[in-house]
Length: 372
Image (cartoon, helix red, strand yellow):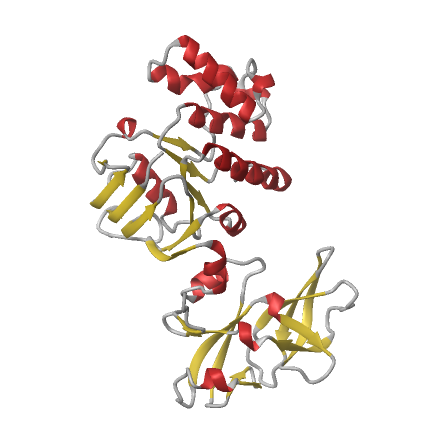
């Protein structure tokens, strides 16, 4: 096991230092020994490029990379002592499960007895000990994923690198395997860096999350901190399912004007905002912090979609407006016994303690400020 430290890592493709498609710029963080870190962000944000650079499959254009006490920036991949699990598992189809598990050990010239002992140990750990004679084509997707993990574990590397290993599984199997991964890490304790675009995987698996966008780090923190204190609008809307509602509002000094509706601004928040008439902000409120109310409420809406989810109902609605301009849309949650139909008009009240205010231009969080 080992720490992984990146210092200003940049991977330049063509003339662009960092692009939304592939490049990364000034990536700096340190994963402590034995922790499970998740790189998350939208497709094309550069998270796989970071992982491949750590693995040695991409060469950094600038910056330094350390695994443990070794500087590995220019070191070939085979000398870095890392094991990588890919999205497509990359199993050898002509080899049995046992042969796939043993392959990395053979390359390291581990003797036959030690190989066999290690294969049995890993197979039992992953509950694939009854599959050792089968070929990958005879396995389900979940079983193939376990074999790919087992091949990595058998090598006993200093670092695990996992690039969206669950994306090919169906929803139920993905949930089950996610729980197994967390249990496995608790048992094995190897430093792990995991890439995903699935915010649920990031929130449930990570000790720490690194949020990336357009090749740059947006925020680093534990899952609950990032969820409760996002540094900007992109993070706020990316983490959370369903995502945070964003409403564009004009501030008049005492209230926010949203599609012709006035939302009173709490005094505590008034003191934080610029007293500029006509200043535009983006307001953020999560669906779980909006509630139906019988009286006037804070916002008046018309129901457009009702999605029953069993223990709760997700409702999508549009703000009522007197103008002909396109109305804002938002989502909220209600109880199953609160019967709503498309076209119904109702009022919502919001929890002002959970309200976010973002700079409309930069997306930076203006309120509440992260005091952690």
